[in-house]
Length: 103
Length: 269
Image 1 (cartoon, each protein chain N blue to C red):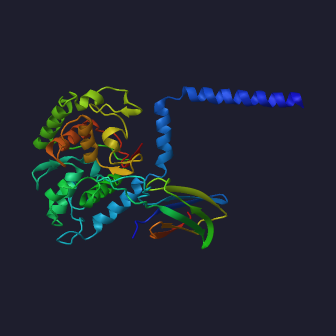
Image 2 (image 1 turned 180 degrees about the vertical axis):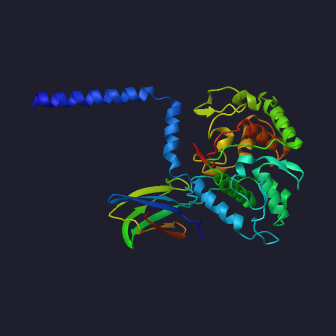
């Protein structure tokens, strides 16, 4: 099971800024290990974010995204107390979902 | 119409010139500071902090106990403020220890882990990765506090003196010492500012910035790994993990940094 994400969601006016830190290796598949064998690609492929259960953004990611990625986005109309959910699925089928409350 | 277009174009050129001037005035160090500021908002060190906090309270090891009774110098289980007073002398091990070597001692004494086995593990693997994560969390618990290493015990004075010797000791194929790079103000290596470690280099600089997350390789670097890499860059043999030399260098830098505010865990390029 993957390590948890860190999600912060802060409301200001009618928009909420969400900052997400994900814990992932994000291996490109281009690197070789000390024995010279290629390290298999392992990266987050799909990111889905929801506001009170309604999907507000989906993103397709590839191997060019950094290790332990940081994602920031704005949600219009989200208020304090609302729930923001972030989920990802990687190319090995591993997934992780975390939830945060807007403050 | 033509005239209006001309005015617009002229305004655009002027605006461009102004931005160029602003860019030219910015030094490389300012650029790096700005880059770090941008990265700070999502410092992945937080992920290691969270992992370390959980490891601290988890029952682990052959004895299946947590580290809740580990004494980091301020009494069993006291974490807040411990980081800014390490390395220090510990009566139970009869040694001056830094944060990481102390953690390994606790893991051996309380949890029954094999300390020698952990010390041999490469950084970032197995239990060594856990030690780094816990060190990150413990450092974070003292964020914003000021360094104040105890120097009351004879062993602590001794450690400082050894550290000073090691700091100025020149050797290796390049005839380098730590002091070659770290004893002058305002030195740089490529684009990295080199702190002057013979005195307090300022808040959140040098000893007060590690453990830190290295963006370029995605690794969490503890003080022991930082020192290990300094030795590598000098083409010295690798020092042993938690060895007397590395702890003494920590004591030397820590005592010199008295009064500096800790920002650890920081973020580095």
